Amino acid sequence: MARKDHILVGLDLGSVKTCALVCRLNEEGKLEVAGLGVAESRGWRKGVIVNLDLTVLAVKKAVEAAEAAAGVSIDSAYVGVAGPHIKGVNSRGAITLGKTSAATREVERDDLRRVIQAAQGITLPEDRQLLDVLPQKFLLDSQDGIRDPVGMEGARLEVDVHLVTASASASQNVVTAVNRAGVEVQDTVFEPLAAGEACLTPDERELGVALVDIGGGSTDLIVYHAGVVQHTAVIPVGGEHFTNDIAVGLRTPIPEAEKMKKAWGERDPAEPADTLLEVPGVGERPSRVASYAMLSEVIEPRAIELIELMQAEIGRSGCERQLGAGVVLTGGGAKLGGLAGLAEQAFGRPVRLGVPSGLEGMGETLPDAAFATAVGLAIHGNRLRLLRDSRESKGLFERLWKGVRSMGA
Image (cartoon, rainbow, N blue to C red; front, side, top):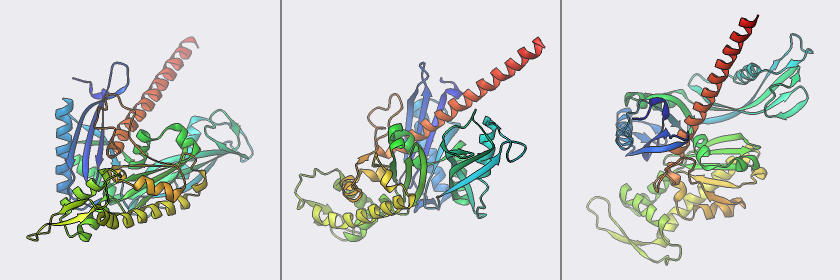
């Protein structure tokens, strides 16, 4: 039985599926997959919870399946939050380092905490809360673009941050659903941040890249440049919209429309467009036949709309010309056939499918864009654990050193 402090769980609550990924630290200190549980999501509409009981049931099913696969009980997890209620904003904070505005001194680690706290001092509506605070760069007196000012000397320290805010009720409903399923929430994370942990390289973040996470109810976007987050946004179009278009356009039930969408995405591009598909009717209506060409006429307009919305958001980021690494599409909706090609034509930049990596023993199932968030949540949790252990070790060293000094005094 693995020690509890060696177990990390990523819990991805989506509109289509709920996924629990259990990881453990192996003997080499690396994070490896221990078990995966997936359940069909219920109780969601347009990226937010509308039926708490059904959502709790889906979480329980996914957690129980992951526990059975891993042979451990799940007590806590890192949980992803996304949806149309998410909004990002840039902010700046500043503090004076010396006792007077002209006095200088060395920047200490605690000064970073204070200036970042100052940058959070924006007025939010009562129904909104901070989800993530992402430092971009520090400014020390007249020197700009500093990544870590600790040890440098100056009089005034400033910081630019990107704040990710969420609807307090929508994000609290996610936490409540997980808690009612018997799992404690260790941390909530904006989902494309987690997906980026699993799909992006440091070089891509440095050169400039837009990560687009296409979920069931919405599409989340995050733009990196110079190694930091520059922009976040949520587009209220996701994979479910494609499915609904097929259901309405071809007059077929939603489950059958979902199957046809997958068939269209997985087909061989060399297959003739006039290849026929059976289209089951609604209710007692008889089945009909449709060609892939007819299906394309339904799907492609929605794909073009989504790409145009992506372009508009990337334009708002101010980094459109700085995406040296192009665009990375991930999430279950990114697997829709032809979407990457259409996006590459529209952006005039390289576009690739983001497949998660970074864990030992991922097997054949997890290297799939649909599991990018779950994998990223586990990696994010491990990063926080390492940071916490580092701080605790440093604190212990400082206490021991102070003890030695007092003994010699």
